[in-house]
Length: 110
Image 1 (tube, rainbow, N blue to C red):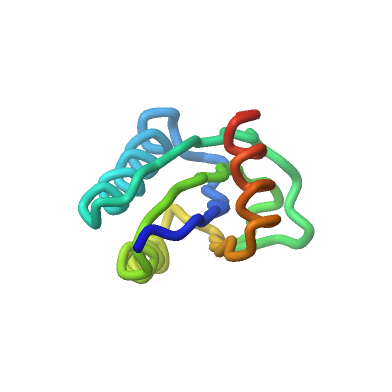
Image 2 (cartoon, rainbow, N blue to C red; image 1 turned 90 degrees about the vertical axis):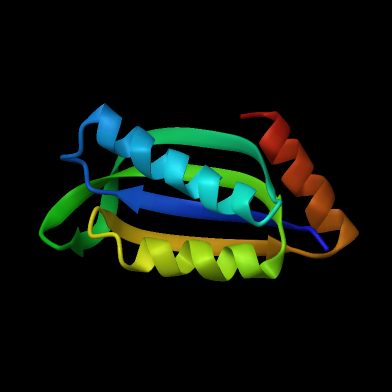
């Protein structure tokens, strides 16, 4: 069963556009391999971090809205955890009808 997820990824600000695009494409590929569907990718841009991470004070933020089975999230997080260009990531699962409606609105507005 496909569930609604949102994963926020913070990448190192020193990466080139090609390197960032490669990471996002890999995320899409992992989700697709589990028969999931990426609905939207929101490139928020470079922002100030609340505290330094690995001596970086800024990070490039992406939010990915997708529908996927739980196995896809486990594999996605495993790959993000071992990618040294990813400073932080966080996945949120939307379960209630109210939350799913909000998820659809956010994904549509990207």
